[in-house]
Length: 311
Image 1 (cartoon, rainbow, N blue to C red):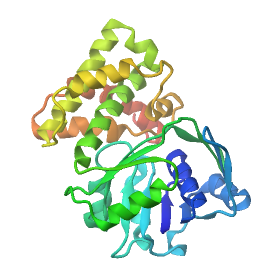
Image 2: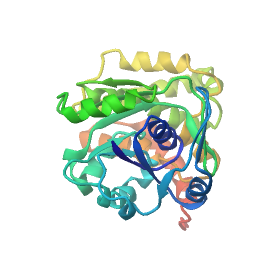
Image 3: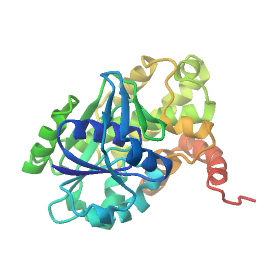
Image 4: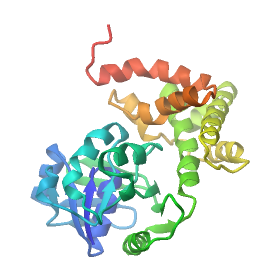
């Protein structure tokens, strides 16, 4: 299968690497020093499942050089989604499927507005990976899981074909009929720990053990769940309690990527993880006081990270 990976960071670099290793025709869309390193030395993956090198690796910063592909793994940071959606136009023809593997729940609408929603599948991944240095991807989690599906619940030939090629990588792959529920279930977890983590700037074990902080963590979870249900997403009756239990059982040093970006003074996924909850809450008449507070506190730092004058 001819595949383009739009965004060769931790997630895209890892999955693109194992897809190439399994015999697929993979091109990485990257930029800057990371692109130059991939071109010169290949893509090195340092994984708990065994290190390997993709060399030579096909990589470019110009999708026009690639042309139409059968599958696009869309793995940019969410704040890069709109620009990346414009950039993938040369990769898309009538038979192209697009599988976003991003945080958040708005990728389909944003990408679909540019290239057409008919190309979009829903996708969720569980993976811990990051760029360690230009051309080098670190993969730290024994788990590597993707759930995907069509938004109409059908098990189509294209989703079956994509499942088959992904299974060859050794990852755990599942096709479901309720992908919107899966997306929002993960989002409840990610949005809540990203919010509290970015505010406290300590590991999950440090803030969940503080009674007052644990209480506002529960509030954040409840607000995200309420917004999802108001939007019409079917969520499990016990999702709030199950999410809190999952957080309580997570590794104590866990820090989501948004928190790490905030701590480093980088542009983060504020709009797609917290801002979207606030905006949807306002549209749907759902109060989101905890998320509104977090958004207001974190936004000045983000404007500064973007180089914008906030005075």
